[in-house]
Structures are given as C-alpha cells and as structure tokens.
Amino acid sequence: MRAVVTGAAGFIGSHLCEHLLAHGDEVMGVDALTDYYDPAQKRDNLRPLLGRDRFTFRQGDLLTVPLDALFGGVDVVYHLAGQPGVRGSWGPEFAVYLERNVLVTQRVLEAARRTGLRRLVYASSSSVYGDAEVCPTRETVRPRPVSPYGVTKLAAEHLCETYRMVFGVPTASLRLFSVYGPRQRPDMAFARLVAAACTHRPFPLYGDGGQSRDFTYVGDVVTAMRAAALSPWTGVANLGGGCEVTMRQAIMLLGQLAPAVRVAPGPERPGDARRTGADISVARAAFGYRPATDLRSGLAAMVLAERTARHGRTAATA
Image (cartoon, rainbow, N blue to C red):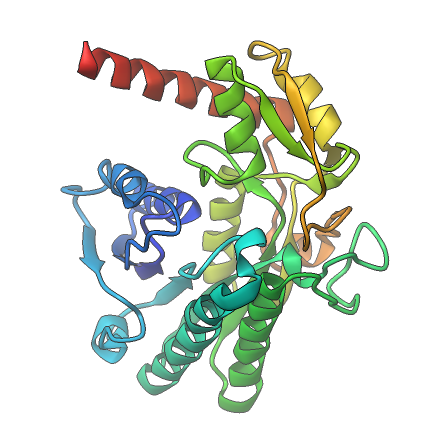
C-alpha cells in the first residue's frame, strides 16, 4: 500500500510511519517542522526513518505544497498535520489554529476529491466533546468543545464529513483520546511527568489531580489507523484506551516505575475538560479496534525511552 503521512515528524506521525513500514507499505512523510515545540525533537523523530527502504520525506507547508502531485497514485493519506494543544489556542494564536487545522484540511480534501483518493484517515480529537454530557462517550453525543483548539478540530472533522457526503471522498475521522507513549510532545502531561521523575524535579500539576482521561497508547492508535484505512468503513469513530484514570492515579502508578515525583500544585487551565472517556464500540465493529496496552506497560515504555535518551545525551557530552 502506498501512503502519505502528513505531520510525519510529530509524535504520532513518526510512530505511524514506523508501523506502516513494518507492514511493508511505501510511505512518503510530509512535515513543515513548525516551531510549536523544538524542531530538533521532530528531526530526532525522523532520524530512524530517513534512509530506510520505501520511505521518503518532504519538508513543506501543506498550504503551498502541490498536493495533487503528492497524492497521485497514492492509496491512502493519513492526515495528522495540524496545530496541537488546548492551552495555546486562546487569543491571537487562534489564527494559527484556524490556518493549520481548518484551512489545511480543506485543501487536503480538495486534493483528495480531484485525485480520486481511495482513503483519507483524519486524526480528530476527543477535544471535540469538551465536557461531554455522558461518559463513556458515544459518537452520537453532541460535541461541545471548551477550547478554540477543540473548535478547529471539530470544524475540520465536519469538513471531512461534508466532503464524504457531497463528493464521496472516503474519509475516516478518528477521535483520539489522550494519546501517550515514547516521543510524546514535551508539553503534554505524561511527557512532563516522566521527565520530572527521571530528573528528580517537581511536576507542575494543573488542577486538583481529580481530572480524568482515557489514556490511549500510541502503538494502539497507529495500529487502528492502518486497520481503518484497510477497511471499507467511513465515518467518525472514537479511539480510546479502554480505561479512565485520574491524574492522581497516574502519578501514583508512575511512582512504582520511577522515583516518586514531588507535585507542585497549580490552578486549572482554561479549556481543559474535567473528564474524558471513549465508547469504542463503533471502532471495534468497523475495523476490529481493541486497545492492547495497559497504562502501566505504556508508562514503563515511556520511562525506558526517557532514560535511554538521557543516557545517550550524557554519553555524547562526556
């Protein structure tokens, strides 16, 4: 299968490229290497991919890259590129979110329509639900995002559904719930928590720690993305980890895997939902989704990756 992965240098995108290559797919990765976080970390994510058979990389902005040429002869596009993060989406930065999450997605959909793309898998977000009316949350629950970021992800998802219904573009929008694992973005909670544990520094905790998430391991997510691409199903589906956990519980669990962290309490941040939980019955029925990684195993993988990376940096400067 020939695939294009947008956002290939990011956390989930780099894992997806590895997964696709491991299954014999031919992959072109595209990424603008924006500075939302240090581009050097994104280049580190790419490094194991560069030079591998069946992988090519193109740096470019999806607003200007000639997408028709890029998508020609491709079986599936995995559209993961966008501006992430709830907390940065307020104020004047909203224009960036509008451009990278909505305008880019519309341009991708137009190219998919013109080229007759066989499948488009869009990485949506549980942030579209905001403070959901019920948990676990089904796809039929009314979305009501509580952040500008969530608004843009929902708008892009609506675009996918519109192009699917009006033009027959075969889109699969996957609402990802709190994805974690090695190479997670440095601003995300588990990345900060694991780094704090491995460096014996305090962990800034926003809120009282009672907020809960349906944490989903990145390996399960990328497996589901490829399964969705290979299935005939189109529409919208949740991808959750199958277990809702509070931040306090996650901190206690990490204390069994690494030195206990000292928590530095702070105020809640605007736009953070109190609780998320996925009903995954649609994904299970549509393309056999079954999360296989429990939180303890996933956190252990993050701790190992963090220690390995720190050891490598120490050896390089010795």
